[in-house]
Image (cartoon, rainbow, N blue to C red; front, side, top):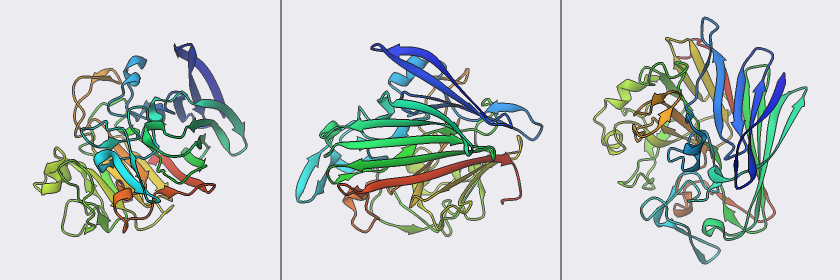
Length: 352
């Protein structure tokens, strides 16, 4: 296994470093100390061709705005918080509004815009990078100084493991995720509409007109959200179900997982032969099929467009701060936040 570091550019005199992790089978992951952004994952197709299966900007400068949050770690809180406020311990906290009147993905200066401290490592279990950052009390309106660590590890089982660890000196909301867009066709030869998605989930969260969970928890049975036996994405996206139409013909919805670290999320592209298995200890996953991607950006040498990639954002349930019946996303002072998500790549098996 191998680790290579390369300086890409600078921001205000601070170097932006690309870390490339390679295992003994040639699988390769490249990530930046800016936003912990994953810019490339090279894995083989059924013929052994190594190609990139994630979306990335052609120019680094696009990451300085990064409207689609490509490849980045999201925090302090992934997802939307209604009215950019919440109550905690009898006090109301006002967050920065960055999507109309709501707070999205940690705000304007979320973790996706942080230059993280980064240290590469190589050990028997794998090769990787350990990122760390202190988010100070009051940042974007959140309480508490919080020390966050994110670790990317690539092993010889063709698994990328993302581990999150955090401690705060005050009670504060916290749920982290990674916002990588996957396209298993390789080098974006096709969109994701013929990808098949399977999720072990009996329940999903309906959204309001601002794409924020209403608080309802609905059964997936008889809806396009029933992915328990697998579904070609085109079939779901073509649905006239009001929730599919609401978000621009696709998914942008949280699913509550039935099980954990048990092949609970499987994405497959039959044509390339690639399969991605996602396993996590998080309560849910937000599935986003790139419905809002526009043609204003250059990605992977092509013009961005709808359905060019799919995000599988393992996390706590969005807007949990406003719904007591959702599992809490509050990290108590002095307690440890810990979460792990594993992304395993292989050639398609009969998962469907």
